[in-house]
Length: 373
Image (cartoon, rainbow, N blue to C red):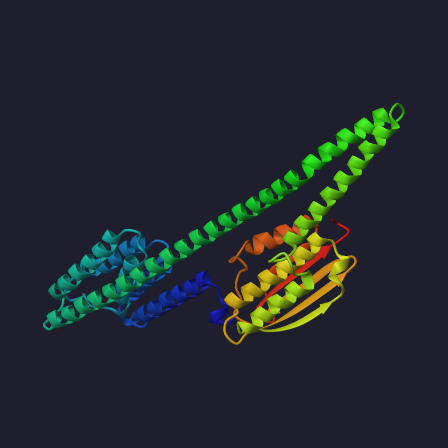
């Protein structure tokens, strides 16, 4: 598997294993100094495998092993290739340790070590010590820079996650408020009419034998009240049916697509069937899904993107397939987003999916049956 296709955790582990192996092989290359120095080098190298998870502990092990070299007699002391493990361990502390004091402490330990090394080296050791000290400073600053960048990225991710949760929360509130509003409108419109109809129907039943004229009058009231409630119900559905309450579903879809094209999104549309054969609620749900999908494509697909819509009306339901070839993005902004779309589809027992298209871009598919209503 190519390195680029591995997840971040596996990439980091593979990199650390490679680093440890390289330092271990460097220690093996000086086997002529004795097997002890090779074992010493491999211990320092293997410890680096855990440098990201336990940076302070790993630095303690590596620095302790390196300090052990200072205890050797002067004629046996020498700098070895695997001493670079100390710089790697220090870098890990500076970048990954939770507390900044650990980073400062690791740098101080390394600087002290670079100052003590000349005491064990022959003439010219001070020059080498200066090089080591400069290396410590450069590596420490690099680690601190990467630490700052990591903390900044983490803060951005936390803020993005918080914003995402807030958007979802606000979307759920918006859906609940919309449901409550429609429920109040339906209740205010129908409850009184139904109460009147029930009272007059009961009265007509009681007066049917003794006062036929009054019974007929009561039944006429029931009929008139029912017709009035039906007219009001149709009016409410018409208001909810489109953005401005005047367009039918096909015109609404056409208008939405025309606006998208005017905004720069190339859209191909394949619309078949007659939406008039569908219940108004199903028709409205289908239009809202198309509207939200187009809005999402305009926001996230990127410049030069194109989209395709297949919208099939039939007496048994409606099928929607919308896809774009752009960068893609979550349907979570503008209105209720994906939460609202799922809510509308669920009301009629339908299904909806939204996500990256294997062929590229973003795809939304939905099926809303009539019989499940």
